[in-house]
Image (cartoon, rainbow, N blue to C red; front, side, top):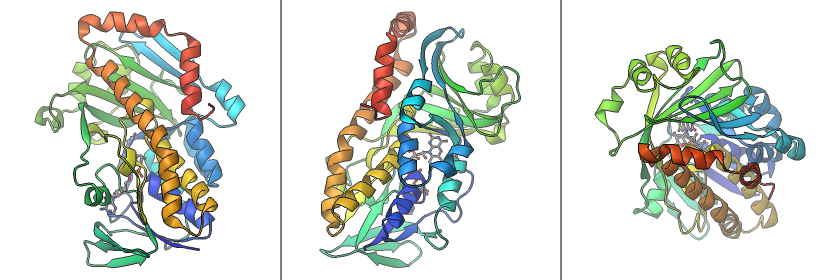
Length: 382
Ligand SMILES: Cc1cc2nc3c(=O)[nH]c(=O)nc-3n(C[C@H](O)[C@H](O)[C@H](O)COP(=O)(O)OP(=O)(O)OC[C@H]3O[C@@H](n4cnc5c(N)ncnc54)[C@H](O)[C@@H]3O)c2cc1C
């Protein structure tokens, strides 16, 4: 069995550690953060992600900390339904829910599933060196580690990717996003379905997560990233911006405190020519970060972990070959998700206001079978 170094204890890194341990490999995970704090808000795990977690023996740990999302609705500013997809038929056929989950709860459950001593906190990778037989990682704290392979799950600003491909920089999507999680005791809040509202001012999404909580996100266009005006935004500013949006959006904002507000610009990565570099493999956001418009960022990371397990099972004695097989299997699907998510973001954020009624009418006319087909592809039924 082989010896692996994993960089990053996010969703991708922890799921991959579990996948490798199940195959009997030795794994050390190195994480930059000194502690895994409760950062982040909600993420969506589609039926495809839940199946991948099941393959890794993690489904039953994650399922109770999420809320099943049985419908996905697209609404206009006044609350009229433009498009509605029902996920119950997929759940019945595939045997897996479409889940809303708090990122911190997901990360905690993935961490809890690992034996003690696997994750080494406070180790920020500085650089690595690769030979024909080994990879050595050098950390900013002066320590180093050597193994037969290195898997980089160090997120969209991956240090490993920047060493391999210095030109590959995250691409700013042109819009910025606030997120928070609130207690869902406001009357009229959705508990089983997610929704996204496309209005003139911006976009607002609602996703129930477990324990009677609701995750929300709000996106506004911003030509430049790191806009100081938006950086200073508080809940009152968002309440003004989204005042004309249908209930329960004003109520959700009223239930949010400034301290709970998370803000960040949205980025993705232009598709890479390969994820496999000899004994070094990129996965998760380090390889194919996407805008969140399809709700597949975390899902792609756990799918990566399950696919890597398949590839290593097929060629256990040759890690570079297994990594190349992973690359061939994962690049087309992740590329399509990044591109479709980008297009959806353009439609949502950059349609001129005078064209919005036409866009909304076109969305309302999309036949149910087209939406169902798209979901079947996302959930890996096709
Ligand atoms: C703190 C945080 C909060 C997030 N919140 C949300 C959210 O609310 N909603 C949402 O949809 N998505 C969120 N995301 C993104 C989402 O988790 C990812 O898109 C998805 O889960 C893919 O995960 P990943 O493991 O590939 O990358 P990530 O989840 O980004 O994890 C990467 C990990 O690598 C670590 N790392 C980075 N550089 C180094 C280094 N040089 N050495 C060692 N370790 C390193 C990071 O600290 C992090 O733990 C968040 C990500 C992070 C890191």
